[in-house]
Amino acid sequence: MVHYVVRRLATGVLTVLCVTVVLFAIMHSMPGDPIRMIADPRTPLEQIEILRARWGLDRPVYVQYFFWLSRVLRGDLGTSISTRQPVARLIRARLPYTLALAVGALVLRYLIGVTVGLIVAVRRGSWADGVLVVGSTVLRSVPSFWLGILLIVVFAVHWRIFPISGYVGPVAIVLPLLSLMLPPVADTMRLTRSEVLEVMREQYVTTAHAKGLPSRVVLTKHVLRNALIPVTVTFFLSLPWLIGGSVVVESVFAWPGMGRLLWRSILSQDLPVVQGVVLIIAVLTVISNTLGDIMTALLDPRIRAQYEGVS
Amino acid sequence: MARGVTHSASVSSGTVVAKRPASPLMRDIARAARHPMFAAGFVVFASVLVLAIFADAIAPHSYREIDLKRALSPPGGEFIFGTDQYGRCLYSRVIYGTRIALRVGLIVVTIQSAIGVSLGLIAGYFGGVLDRVICFVTDVTWALPPLVFAMAIVMAMGPSLDNVIIAIAVVSWAQMARVVRSKTQSVKSLPFVEAARALGRSDAGIILKHILPNVLSPIIVLATLSLPSAILSTTALSFLGLGSQPPAPDWGVMLNEGINYIEIAPWISIFPGIAIVWTVLGFNLLGVGLRDVLDPRLKT
Image 1: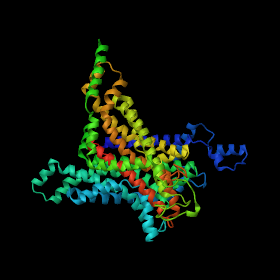
Image 2: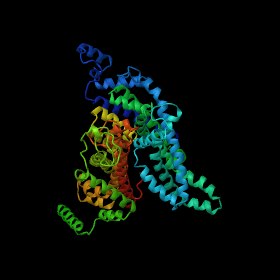
Image 3: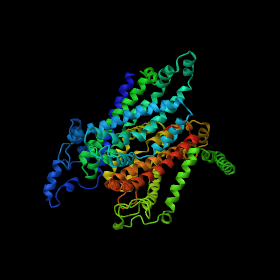
Image 4: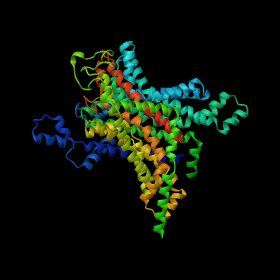
């Protein structure tokens, strides 16, 4: 098990390194000159050269990469071109808002998804089952940003229960949370349902029933425990999609998080901020994928056995 | 001698294919047509396709004709869906939007399938170092939040619909590569591939003639299931102002323009969204139906 965890962590670090290279390559293939973009067009050429040297933009690309990487490792993500503020500070101010949104949506999604999926699986073939199959297909076809717009029209414009946009107190999180959480909750319900149905056909479940265990115990101790393994994997794997979704949803609701910062910085071509935000998001993603893999190995004795045999 | 055997074998296999009443794939598609979700999806898809092809005949107005006198008219009367802030007919704009959505979806899926299928075939067939390298690249791509990286790529290339198409395709081929690789690995060891190799076929010939046809059904299923997310991602980027630019009748652009008038003209924000849901739902139903029939074990 230790062997597996170490190897998985090493892969994670390697992945993050690759991400930094890819990110740097993308940003450096940009046409246009970031200095000329911010400088007054009448700025003399020498002045531009001085600025270029100050930002390190006159060095070869790979030197710039290693400079950038070593600064990043020391926690320095550079300075925003448009606001002149440290990127790390900009991100730190917004990270809690994005995490509140993403983690909140993740937890709600799995609480609701697993509960409904389980209920529907137990009552297979009932009307609730049919409603779920059709409803989840419709729900996953709804773009989260449009759901956000609809919620604004209904709950903020028509009924005026919630604020239209911005962060004006904790209640403002309700609508963004709903629009981020509802479309993927359908997938969780369906996955839980199909996994539970599959496990219920296993022989050990029949045995558990046969030896006279109450069905509630069979359901929680035998069925749910095994059915939740794939669900747990998707719990961690869904973080990247959630973050992608939150970029768009934050823009709809003017939510002061990282996604909105990323969007604004892309529109204003603020390279250091975009690099910093994408990097942080990539690191969060890799951490959550790694955790997901390790959790799966811990939960599933079959996977654990594979690696204990090796080490 | 060997050459003669190869030749006659390929000729006879050719005639067998020609005489067979229906290929297994066609039979499966016929079976899929009786699947309720596939049938429903096909009806939805057909409606979108008809709107896209006959948009000029169906749309009552031009999608870009500006008339400020009739700006922000509510739905009803001459304008079924109402008008936007420039007085353009929303109903006509939504109809012309089908062309953009279908085109974008098909191109994204074609590019991402081309990348995913070729990398998957190469990794699965050759194995070894090539496999390890491709797997690592696939894992890295898989580990990135797709929409975020697509946004970074679009920033580097400049906002336009074409760049959004490329960006989305480049970040979303990993699943296809993984599935094709594992299917290729299992097909590779089957006797007919061994036979083809013994007959001296080249690797490229074996991959194209013997392996690709046998991994086709998961490819079709995955490609169909990728269409909805391709459309959702591209409209999301257009909504953020990174894709299609006004006055294109792109549903994402329309929603982006509508949000400024959400309090006085909510209809601008509603109808393009319904069009997105309808189109995406059609492809989702088609994909689920195809998956149930062609490849029940494939889970997404």
